[in-house]
Every structure is written in C-alpha cells, then in structure tokens.
Image 1 (tube, rainbow, N blue to C red):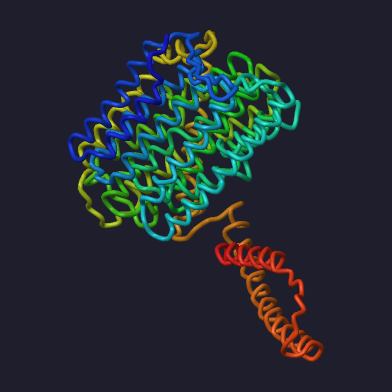
Image 2 (cartoon, rainbow, N blue to C red):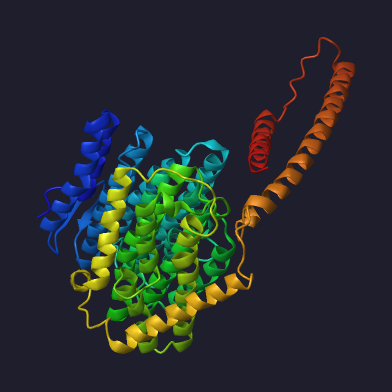
Length: 563
C-alpha cells in the first residue's frame, strides 16, 4: 500500500523552498530526494494508487519493475543535481528544479494516459525556467523555442490519447503498438521528447543555453521520461530500430565540428538515446534490458560530463573549445572527474557504459540485424571521438588558453565525485543494476571476446583521432554557431516571416487608403440622396470587419515575432 506518491514529496518541498532561504532551503532540497528514495524502497511491485476525477478513475501511481527502476534513477539524479546546485541562491532555479524532478517521477509512475499527460505538461512548464534563468536574449529565445516544442509534444499526446481512447475504449498506459492513428500520434509525441531525427534540435538549442546547474537537471529527466514511455508502450516496434540507429549516427558529424562543448554533449545525448531507442525497437529481454540499463548509466555519466562543463562555465564564463585549454593546471579534480565521465560514455571496460551499451549491440545480432550492429559499432567509435576525447582534450588540455581559474566549488566536486563513483561501481560490478532491470538478465559483459573487441575498437578510434590531429585534418575549434535542421525555423522561417510582414504592411496601407476613399465616396452618395436630414440606417458589417481586423492583427503580431 502506497502511503504517499513520491512526486508529492518534491512538490511539497518546492512550496517550502519558495518561502525559505539559505541553509534551510538547502536542507529541504537535500532531504527531498532522500525521503523520496526511502518511499521508493517501501514500494512493492503491484502497488497502485487511484483517484476519482469526474467519471474517471485515474491510476496516480502504478508500480512495476520498469517504473521502480526509473524511480530510483530519478531520485538519485535529483540528489546529485541538488548537491551540484547548492551554491545557487536563485529561488526560481531551486524551486523549478524540484518541481521538474517531481514531474518526472509522476510521469514514470502514471498508470493511465491522462495522468501521464498531466505530468508530461508539467515537465515542460517547470523545466523551461531552468533555461530562462540563464538570462540574456539568447536564453530567452531558446526557452521560448523549447516551450513551444514541448507544448506541441503535449498537444500531440493529448490528441493521440483522445483518439486512442475512442478507438479502444481504454486510457491504460501499457503496450500500445503501431496499429492506429492514435498510436501514431502518441509515438510522435514521445519521439519529440526523445529527440527523434528532425525534432531533436530543442536539445542542442536549449541545453547549452541553460544555467550551469540547469543543464544538469535537464540532462536527467525529459529525454529519459520519453525513453521510459517508449519502453512501456512500444517495445519490439521495428520502426524504432532504424530510428534509433539513425540517432546514433548523425549527431557524430555535427559534434565533431561544434565549438561549444555543452552543445557537443547535447549531440552526444541524442547519440546515446539512439542506442536506447534501438534496444526498445529490438524488443525482447536483452534489448529492453539493454535500453533501460543504458538509460540509467547515461543519466549518471552524461550528468557527470555536464557537471564538469558546468564547473568550467561557472569558473571561466565559457565552454567554447576555442577559448579553453590548460585548465588541468588549476582544476585537476574537475579534469579527473570529466575523464571518468568520458571513459564511461566511451564504454571503456570497468566503466558503466561498457556493461549496458553492449547489451543493445548483442541484441541487434541476436535479432538478425547485422547492418544495424555495424551502425552501432561505428557510432560507438564516434562517441569516443567527440565525448571521450574532444570534451576533456579541448577543455583541459590542447593549447594553453592562459586561463587560471579556481577549482570548482566544493559542492560541485562532491556531486562529481559521487557520480564518478557510481560510474565505476556500475562498470565494475553491474549485477546490482542488472537485478533492478525489468527482465531476468542472462548476459555476461566481461567475456573475453567482448572485452578484446571493445579494447580494439577504442584503440582504433583513438589512433584515428591522433593521426587526424597530427596531420592537421581534424576539424579545428572555430568560433561560430552550427545549425542543422533548426536552420529552417531559425533562419529560413524568420526570413519568410519578414517578407510576409513587409507584404502585410504594404497591403494594410493600401487597404487603409482604399477604405478612406470608399468611405468618403459612400458618405457623399448618402448625403446626396437623403440630404443632411436623412435617416436611412445602412447595415455596416461591423462584426465581420472586427473579426478580420483581429485576424490581421494576430497575423501581424505572429509575423513580427518570428521576424
């Protein structure tokens, strides 16, 4: 029996944090994920909490091994994120961070689609403040684009739920599959959260624009709620195999030429989510176990990498590779922790990525997809290049930038140290993580062929990068902004909007002049026929005119905003 839903702990704590200050607020923030974690440990598979709303019975909390795994993960991630952000005095960031983590917990324990939708929207509304809190025009615009895309995901989800409920007569949040319009709408909504190709740019746009601590929170929850929803509703969907394989591949090429190291990590996040999506598409015990275990590990090691870059940003004011280098001299602890994260994401043996990513790759072979396996193999080598080598090399080594910042604050170092310890523990002794997975695990990551193959792959990738650098063929770190699909709405659409706005202004002036002449003509005509004492009541289309005037104004405002 569930006494209190874990998400309520975060919501109550957020309310208390809003009216407290200093050490009291910090104590509340630290205690919140601990209390939620204790509640999670008391929950049993099969427990659920229901509430009545109008004529519906909503399953507010539904417990099984999949939801428990993500519940543990989100409690742990929020604990690390809170420690990392203890130096922050900004009420908005601290309150929104707690609400955001609570919304993620609510989503993974939702037992019906209506409850899922509520927390889906709360995720968008609470997280946008972590981007906006950075201040400045860039963060403001990025936060608006982020919110629009997230709300669009929610609208598609709601439409899918309504159609699905009409088609099936049920709103249960379980396996859905792809066999109807409603199921497709729900998949697209989840795909936006996961960063599917062509709808991925909100990650590379908003995450680098957020505050140093806000990005750590963001990296843990939104995309992983999407992965959870896919694992719940679409396991074994073949389309996801190819979507996931594509996601592992294309970010590599953009990450290589990207100068902003937090943006490099954002592309890397899409790459890693691709492994998870592919595993879910493969289905079966090995595929799904590989996907969700890699989600668990990714939250920790990607959070660790974002923490290290957040510490660099906090101390130097930049994460541009062209402006960094030589930081290992005064930030040795941050350098070491970053290298642990780099080894983990690159799947070095005895680091966390090694014990989860390989499960997806083996599943691809077992399910008869050798070409997909080759794609994943290439993507694994690419990860070493852009996240395993590029991030620590250009931030802490490379050329000496002359910057000599202080080491990261103590709370940041503690958070990074704990995350590093988890990465090493999961990589060296993965059976604790394996015991939490939704299916029994019959997989041994430390077999001779697997270890040897991975070492050979890592050595080959490392040598390739060194040769390219020595030959001067490796893309240099050049100041600038790289746009991929977002070029269409950040460059082309504003250009078209300015053209439409200019045309609308010209049309409005013409209509105004024509209207003045027409009114004068009509007035003279009426005066001649009826004289100054005429009482003819002409029926002017006032309502229609007001409507079209309002529509013209709305269109003008929209075009003006986009332009």
